[in-house]
Amino acid sequence: MAQKTCPYVKTCGGCQQLLFPYEKQLAKKQEAVAKLMSPYGKCAPIIGMEEPYHYRNKAIATFAPVGKNQFVLGIYAKNSHRVIPVKDCLLQDENLNQVLESVALAAKECHMQAYDEDRRSGLLRHVVLRSSKLSGEVLCTIVTAQQNFPGSNNFVKALRKRSPQVTSVVQNINPAKTSAVLSPYYKVLYGSGYIVDELCGLQFSLSSRSFYQVNPIQTEKLYRKAIEMAELNGTESVLDTYCGIGTIGLCAAASCKDVLGVEINGDAVRDAAHNAKRNKIGNARFIEGDATKFMTELASHGEKVDVIFMDPPRSGSTPDFLRAAAKMAPKKIVYISCDPNTQARDLALITKLGYRVTKIQPVDLFPHTDHCENICLLERK
Image (cartoon, rainbow, N blue to C red):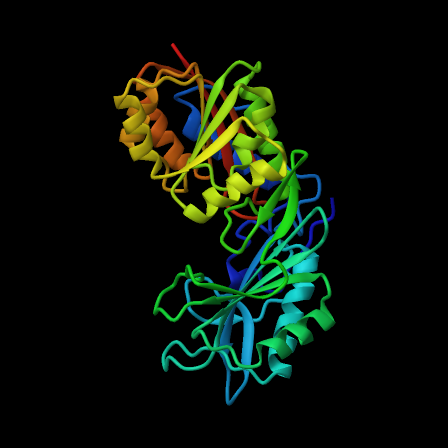
């Protein structure tokens, strides 16, 4: 495999491993996960990518003022708030690279101004793009500092003229002085406000705020491996915690009796219910709620479940969640983690609560970065 280089590698900070051959990156990640997991067992060989470039189906870029009535559109340099105009990112879908250039040209054509964080003036803050592997369609979300968006119709026309694959344009209104890119306030400027992608043979609607893994090729491998490790036989009641838009639970639904998902983000829960209907899945339902509180309540009522899938945020799970999970006495817990460090911390507790780790499988979802996903199968002793 030919190794590619990027002129921004030392200033951007997004590809910490790009200068190393991919085989060495995989070996380094395998070693790091194996060291963390050594108290619990032996790791299976890491699952890498055949073509580890242009895998990201999501792009986030920031507008920054430069000179009088000019701007750059790019990403923050590492450890700074300086925006560098990165073009042709090696991680992003090439489709998204082209659309980002079109966004910048359309905004300049419409004489729009970037938001100045210091002066708190200007309009455009960020752009968030999502692409569909299924159709090639792109959802474009423009983040503005105010609700009023003069020239929005002309902007949409100019953008779609250059990039007709943009089938939805959404305005996100974020006036707050915050590092958060998106706010809860949206307005659809063009199209349906979502795109549809395919994963494990199912179709999923993706809106601007939907949580969806950024590497669809590796995500499919990750989910198929996690479901395979659970060894479902069609009779199990499955609990899908931190479920997002329901991807794992819906992918597992055909192999079990029923699925109950819990997710704190209300938009994601609505997306999950919609995705169940879209795929004609009748044995899955989803509830809005904090995973720890939900699990604690179920456990306090003596509820039992056969299998728990858990895919918590980078910060990992909580002791109360893990205690409640053990109290519900599932035969198996499948723990998917985007940070093996916090996963190892959580395993230290749950292995004292009647469970043992029987399988460990690292998966490289983020080539050329320091990040690595890991799946652990825990079985009741």
